[in-house]
Image (cartoon, rainbow, N blue to C red; front, top):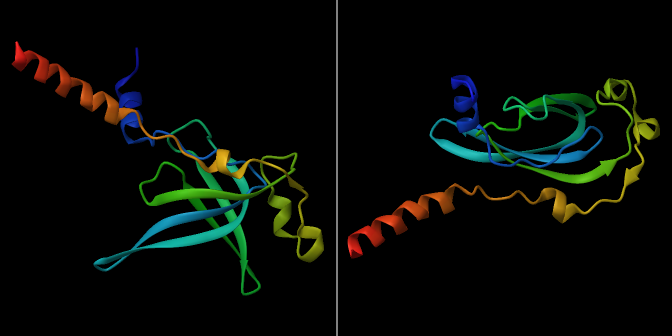
Amino acid sequence: MQSVIQKIEEKFKKHDVVDVRSGDTVKVHQKIKEGNKERIQVFQGLVIRVDRKGSHTSRIVVRKIASGVGVEKSFLLHSPLVEKVEVTKRSKVRRNYLTYMRERTGKSARLSSVDFDRNEVNTVKEAPVAAKAEEPEAEQTEATKE
């Protein structure tokens, strides 16, 4: 039996998200609202931290170098503001928190890449909610025919 809190959390959780790991280079598409206008901003960088992977509060920290300055941004994966997360490169790392990458620059900041199926990793399964919504309509039409 699920508690009330878990039921509410499941309601706001996305059906499926991309499997993101530490060491991945990702493009995060985020909705930005400026006044009345809404646009998509892409933030590309290295995932240096993954938190609470199975939870509705799962979060990734992405780091990039912009104009010679390191910029880190935290994204909640199940947030409605995060449109999509696209993995562009996967690297071999042996830690979950890559905080040592903050001090690295140039060639020492390189990570060895690993071959992976980009299409398979970046495909997100659609929610089966649409199929469930169609079933009651079919039952109603059968009841009206009789």
